[in-house]
Length: 197
Image (cartoon, rainbow, N blue to C red; front, top):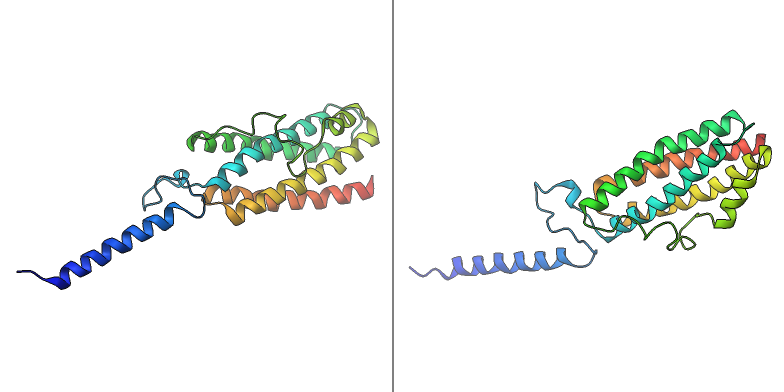
């Protein structure tokens, strides 16, 4: 027997499903093919997550390079070398994780290398800045490293805050939160060190 109420309910349910599907496919720049229950957390990502990973890789790589520079110098304050080792220990594994996410998301691993878009990235040192640190020694090197790394950390925190606000991937957001927390603490340590050197 024909039941118009049953058909109307089915049509309404179908219209709702189509509308919700259209909403979730646009707007936020979400590029994941599935955000259904049971989908891999890694598969949930959007453009902000990709940009965060692509920009943070060369940013972290430069911080590691700066840390290596100060660690290669003689007569550097133990507190400064401890900080440089701490930065390397934190950011090295994060670089690996960021590359793994980009690979899983089918995105380019980085911003086209260390020479692309560097000047526009928050807190990045120029070639001249890096050369100045490389050439410095003793107390001058310590001061330069701390001043540069404070600026570098401030840039990383800005990028991480953008990820927290705009990202979708829970793991990437968690890393961004860790970056904000850890690097804010390190900035406080570096500012104290600058005052005591």
